[in-house]
Length: 234
Image (cartoon, rainbow, N blue to C red; front, side, top):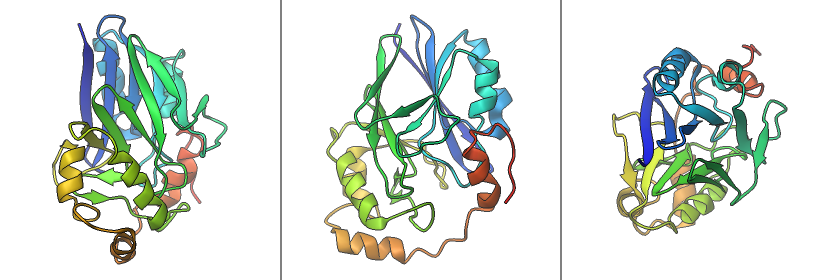
């Protein structure tokens, strides 16, 4: 018996959802669940006989609609968790920096990693860190909406780089088919911030990004501010 870990993928937005559980107690958490794959996630949770305890968001997403509220409707004992800098009414728990939650014999700890958005949190479980859109594999999050700040993101990633080198990095997205990295790899090889890149150069690189807005941003952001309980167009 140990830690059950299932990384899951939603292809339209290239979003990773992570399901973790204590195999002994069956208490489980899910991170960054997506509306389009709700039935897949519900089916897996039921199939494995898990007791979903926490539905966790790394931030208010702009590229997909969360299934947090629909999952809570199905698993009524589960609580929706976001960082304290995202004070939305649908959250049951607004996690503080370094605050911990427990599922079975395991602990999940929240770490404030703003910059992509003001409310971003990363989460540590065992030897894993789930970085949302703060630290990506060989890249980093964009900073051009939702109170984003490249200077703040630099400081957040430096905080992640203080984790042990062997810590496995699981991001919120990957657009190249990669599934996992490590803190050591990202410190060495990340094209935005790895090696000897200083803060000024990181800010320059982030500001030089020329990315179109996410296709669903005008629907996803307001809908996610109510945890996916309804679709809101703006």
